[in-house]
Image (cartoon, rainbow, N blue to C red; front, side, top):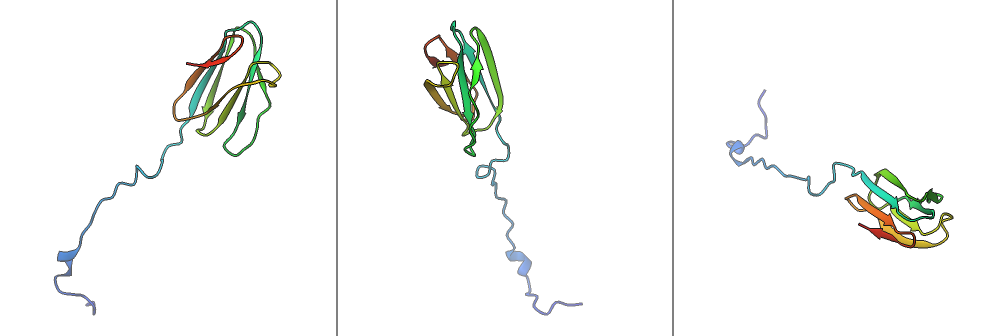
Length: 112
């Protein structure tokens, strides 16, 4: 069966081009790990605010202990408090694409 609309030598004008869209679209979800070290003699605390806006209750970080937070997504906000009740906000960090470590010296949270 012959095509009625075929144009003679139309195949000579066919151009196939490869386009890389990888830089435009993120194909992997990043999971970030944060380490919280309480080097003080009293308890401190932290909470997380997810990118959706959901807020977690404060979690205690006991004296001379460490907490490792894994599987965090970028844009999650970490609030670090200098007391166990979550009443005195001392440092806020918005999770980026790399992990971080924070040390509590008994008074302040210090990013490493």
